[in-house]
Amino acid sequence: MALNKIQDMIEKLSKDPNVKKVISEVQTATKDIQSKVKHLNKKEALKTYKQLLKKVSSKENELQKEVKSFLTKVKKSAADVEKNLKNYKKQADAKRAQFEKMLKTKSAAAKTATKKTTRKAKKRPAATKRAKK
Image 1 (tube, rainbow, N blue to C red):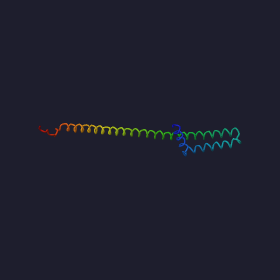
Image 2: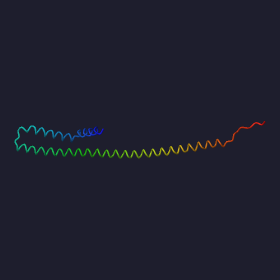
Image 3: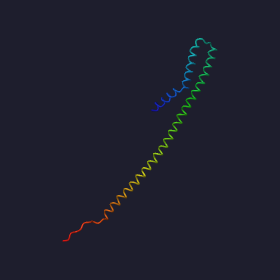
Image 4: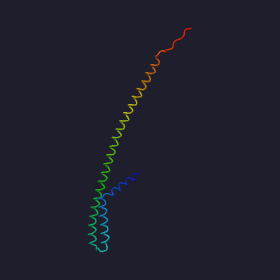
């Protein structure tokens, strides 16, 4: 389950236009290196390597910033969800307590009503007359 969530996050991150831009620039730099490798001497190779290293490191920093901002958004939304869940739980507990209180008062009222009706029945004298012999 956690693996699926991580895969979903990676998929969402890969759809980000800034991330796509960084990936395409790194791929372009790789193609440039491969095409120039055949025609370079030592000094040109070092110079090209340093330039590409700067580009890659700057793009890596941009990618790190994108990942951090994405994770910050995820953490913030998770915190908001948790906060809302706590609020809903409090509301649910309050409603449950309210319903329990209503049930207790209704059951207590029903018990007292049944006691009163049974007492009334006992207090009434019998209406039958005895026949004389």
